[in-house]
Amino acid sequence: MADVGCKYVFMEVSSHALHQNRVLGVHFVGGIFTNLTHDHLDYHKSFENYFEAKKKFFDMLPAKAFAISNTDNEYGNKMLQGIKAEKFSYGFNENESFHGEIKKMKFDGLDLVFNGADISSKLLGKFNAYNLLAVWSASNLLGFDMGKVNIVLKDIEPPTGRFQHFTSPNGVMVIVDYAHTPDALENVLKIIKTFAGSKVISIFGCGGDRDSMKRKVMGYIGTMLSDIAIFTSDNPRSEDPEKIIEEMKTSLSEEDLKKVKTISNRREAILEGIGLAEKGDIILCAGKGHEDYQEIKGIKHHFNDMEEFKKAFSAPK
Image (cartoon, rainbow, N blue to C red; front, side, top):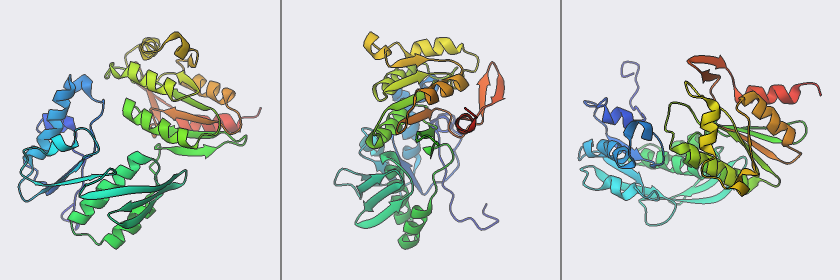
């Protein structure tokens, strides 16, 4: 990258990489802490271990580096404690080094203000407002031309499988999103609830051979924030899909379960969701997003949520 003229490298440093010392010897000039939510506990075993793995990155930053932390997150201030790097905060509450305001949140994007500068974006949701503010803050500290940065932020297209949506011929809004953690599922459903005029139908599952503790949490969130929740398979891997679905139901009352349908075959679950939807309804299909496969018993079968929806809606009635 240096040989072809790259001057900056922005990289995600995972908690796994930090725990396994995979970035030792890499010299960072800055770091951004976005959030800490329920994820990767199959590897870290406890939330405290997960936090300590992420904290390791900020502890290794030198005094001449900067550390930017989302202090709206409950771990934001804690992440900056005892570090050598220069400390900065960002968020949407008050008294941050980089302060954001959401002026308008709509289906075609966001209107924002960052430290007095007007910012518009094609991205959706408050979680993306946080991501944009983090990028804007880092760009500021790196001395970039902020006029150019603002233009770039405006032109960013949503990635495939992240709140990817279309409206069917009969007026049903379909949204495909990669949300596969409790926090991500909650975020995307809360965005949808702000726009929904009719029913919200969610279709989602939980991956096999991964953190099983999040299954009941995701089942509860999906049910509470949907009018109808269809529990199905994600990537079951070596596990029995029916067993995963049963674990997703363990936090639900008898009354809650009246809103839930269980269909382990993901294609059939999608068809069921389409059959239940009427004009003005929104279907969220979460968990796989951009993925074009489903992993079952060690074999990856071609499967893409968006393809399945478009095929179903274009099929002759």
